[in-house]
Length: 195
Length: 415
Image (cartoon, rainbow over all chains, first blue to last red; front, side, top):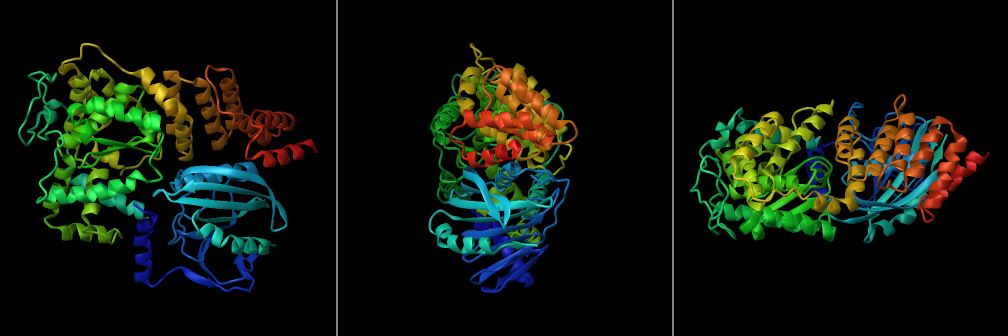
């Protein structure tokens, strides 16, 4: 079953309920995402906010998106439990961010999270120190396949600030979409401010 | 949420046909359709199973509903062939297919096994002969005979056309497709009425418990016919039961446990059936062949299990594998990983003990163990030991993709 088919019922319910979660992130304006984090995209993006997480896309979530993790705390997941509304059961066995985690463990945690998304053939191609919002952080790149066998590329970059994890993950299909908006992602990344 | 709703629907379907039995009487219940006993079949007069009413290379009459369902499943099979979840390791695929052929005998050409990368214990049969075996199952059988037991069980579903019966059962009980549509719509699944959806419901969830018992009977028969020791079949359930008990978060509904006879009952019945069936002359468990086939992928499968973060059952699984004794160093490494990642009181010290055990045990632990040792020391504040472990990691992995990050950590430890 394709990802698209899986998400179709969710999207349909939302359409029927008239409560589609996307809003517009206007280009050229600084946008406060809460918890002291702000970004300034150069162009308009579709934005879907769920709790501490946001999905931004230009072409559709399955083709290309940015996941923003806005200050995950001890016990939080790296992705929302549901796009409809993040209702996490902290007792559920799931890879979770823990206070005191090192940056090396964040990569490990993200890989486990990807596995729970049923991503396949995950390979981290490079993992190196990088600045994030002016702080010492990390950046790793990875490749994987979704359940249907589509090749995807990704880049995750972030930092742990005052025991909270801030991270942007850009993902897209290897064919066309990842490259198409990579520059736009880099621009958003360079605009991240955390106060 | 969708998954939960699907769980609800599937468990509902499972409940419709669920019934309990505690002796072999359930295994002797009327098998509909004519019975045929191929020449040389090792079944005895009192063994309640025969090969079913499907001839090898059977294709349904194109005018029938069954043919329509096959068409849908063939479409699904085309997708599965290129699915990301499909394990494509030529040697391993060839090995699993060879076991399937040995078990299925004249039906070899009718059954196609797809090894799917997924943690946990599961396998499934589609009505057209497409069989799915989850990679997690390879960690939970100890030898080829046990793998043959599972494949034989699934082949039994095919030979007895259980999926077709299940689909008919759902339709009969609901009396119309509309009912199913309503249930699915209520669960937020708008694509109801699709035959493929029905097929999926019927195949992945829930053959009834009676079908499962029947498939177990066929499993024993096919194992014996193929020259495997039928006594191996019940042993799988002993291990699975222990793992299930260790899962404190285990909650019904799980399709597998909702639709299958309870493990204890199943074990007893399989023991009795193994005694009833005519034993092959030479008993084969194929342990070495099995271990050789799974060795290259085992650590990836163990990592898949660890990603589930179900530490209790994972520990039970590791205990069983250590007892089994192949590449114990790798298993101690994963015991260490389990403790390090769980990171509750005392876990980091235990992790280090297991890493040390891995270093000195027979076999070979993965090279990333040094990084894990470094991480455990780092968390415990052992800066010198952490630095040494990270140095060892880089020395053993000169081309490590995380080399730059590790060097930065080492730099921080030098301050």
